[in-house]
Length: 249
Image 1 (tube, rainbow, N blue to C red):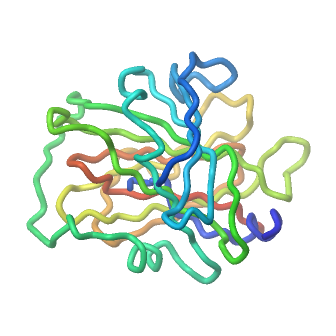
Image 2 (cartoon, rainbow, N blue to C red; image 1 turned 30 degrees about the vertical axis):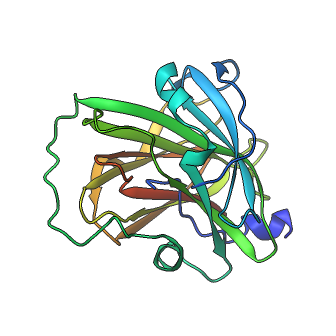
Image 3 (cartoon, rainbow, N blue to C red; image 1 turned 120 degrees about the vertical axis):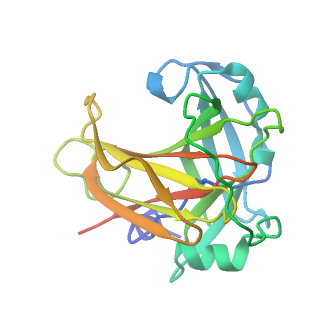
């Protein structure tokens, strides 16, 4: 699969709120240097795979809390291949097990945002995909135990790397798609973008925190250098999955 093919019309899904994996290589976390400070004071790289180990990716994971970062390994992420012609909803219906997500009355999680259990950031550094696979979704299974009863936060971000740059700056069309997939715990999200690599102001496409219901989806597109989706959820399953794609118009 050519890089051009991969970037063109790659339909966004993601990173995530169940934003995917198996295991291979894990580097020790290290203090942040060239990575922007908001990504996390501590970072590490994980090589992750789909269940069949046919597709792989290098994922950067960051957190301001080193003990939280230490909890996360490649076993907490799984890649879900997105084939040509598939949508994010198609992928979840055919590939993601919802055995633990019985249709029950939704839990009233409350709005005590000050009760934060943990927060991480993720970003793909590289992907190695088979022919016919246009993108991958990142499914997350968090490592937190029952003692972490507050809100869990996650940020999945994407830096533009498409084929048609706008001027000299590395920026272009990025599309973000979010999908809700937990009928028990509510999921919330926000989407924003950074115009240039030297910009400091984020612009909202979806203000925090918008609720997304089970099996609902939303997509936003902008010309930018970087886009990010923020998520919050309770329970052991992320309630929002995020995916990015590079679009050409």
